[in-house]
Length: 267
Image (cartoon, rainbow, N blue to C red; front, top):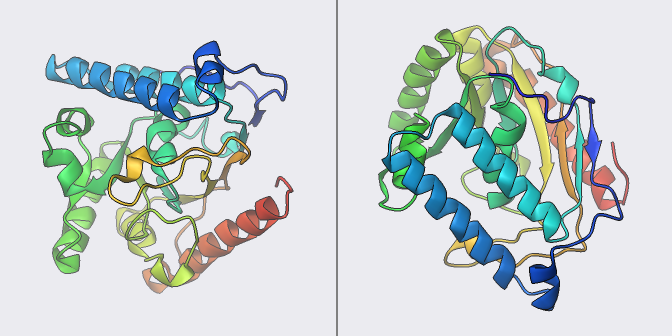
């Protein structure tokens, strides 16, 4: 499977793209967006329970959600697609984690051109609602209560999946945060890549178009004035002990893009 949704190396939502009537009628609230979001989730859950939520279904669901964001005023700026579109090897994607948006949309970019899965919180895999969807994509679940056990699991299952040609998407921060704190960006991604003998691709994200709610983060507010940025960097080989230098390189990649985007620019 390889669908060229974006044949170019970058994509920018046309500035004159109209919003859906339903979204406009609800006076800029998040009601239309959230109702459609839930509809997509229930549809994906049903397909997963039927045993049909394969890679193609995952990509299609992600694509539909991507379209929903644009229909609700989201303006995407995507760069660096050339860095992984034609890769013949599995890769570890490592990025900052700002909101639910990237979790929903990344499969559209990545899984459309290669086999891939996530490192995710264990409760998303075991829960009754998201569980069937997540389990269908064979992720690597971590509990976030025992770092040593989480590390062992990511190394073991990650290496096994990479050896089978499955790329891994990992957000090394403990949780989703709008503010990027380098000290909270751990090195588990580069360590996995080093042990598996594969390269990494840094991913800088600015997705605060969709905010995080206090209790249920996926149901936070949306701010149509904020552009959405995804920047994929060139593949990096891990050469330093423990990937220390490469992890700093990824952090610098994320920080430089965030600074530029906050200043109103686009790298």
